[in-house]
Length: 435
Ligand code: SF4
Image (cartoon, rainbow, N blue to C red; front, side):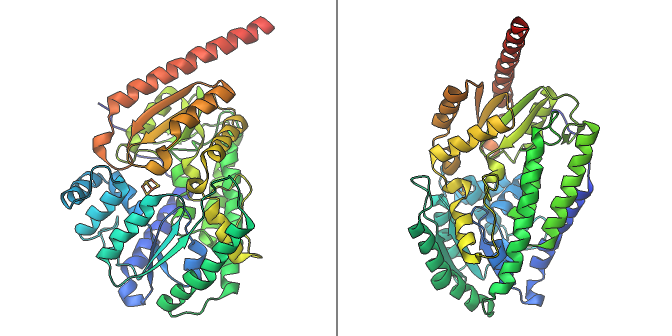
């Protein structure tokens, strides 16, 4: 049995984020009075700046699902969806979202999330996104549907034809539908202002995740990292608030570095940094705290993760560009992690392992997420061959509690940590022999 964990310590940045999220759900609860239009969309390839340009409010079904899991409601919602003919193999984010809809679509603040006026699908590599929105379309027949089809980086590059195709879709499909739903004309100057703020936030986020180069790392780039990416992934990219949040977070982290402190965990500071890891794959949300605890109890800190790049890969240099507004929105979608081919993902992970001096590489393979799980074993073997680094593999699920086995995961992780320990001893002996 996992031990009971204590209350999380709160810093100013955490409070700021909490206020932002509460504000968004409050605005959503008020749409009947304010007349604001509601846009359901996904995190990878999210067009936050464009949605804001049309004064719409975003809803992210994935966020609804993960919040339901953290509130221990996802198991019931998934069973409800399965009773309604959604197979066991379907992505559990989808089933959790469907179950939540069948139960009145009540959000984390206890108020109903309004129905969508528009379903905006920026399709970035995951086929499930399309099926998910087909399901939503059946539930919300009055919603307008628009699909931005993002070409996959099959050959690991973005060609001029791909750029032109994206631009054409923005001009001929996406913007006209958003004008129709919002009743507003497209205002490019307004979009540019949002994009300038996005670029600023993206610079900060890269700086924040680069702080894990320090020893000890002042942050955990996976378990805490999923909170850090919150504001840019749930509709605040392109706002002053997001920039303020990231500035504040960065200054808090700088304080930690000055004091030589490790990451904050739900039980306070991590005292000793024993192992530095790179993790591939999303976390488990139903037992998030217990899962994290296995790592911090042993002194394992995650110095980089692919999952924190799911809403945008900024460390390879991409930034939203107010001088090329629609072009850069298209490039953003094409550069999403789920839209990158397997060799690109391997190169990115190799860069993470090298840049952040990781001691080991761990895959958390998610049962229901084909988009992440396909190719994960081959990626792991390739990294093991290239870098001769200890690798580990565990399996869980995003929001289905039936697929999180605490004892199995703990056993596997303990074997992985033993392997890391042995490698550390061998390296120390080699160093001693050289001296
Ligand atoms: S399969 Fe994975 S990427 Fe696709 S919707 Fe489900 S969780 Fe998201």
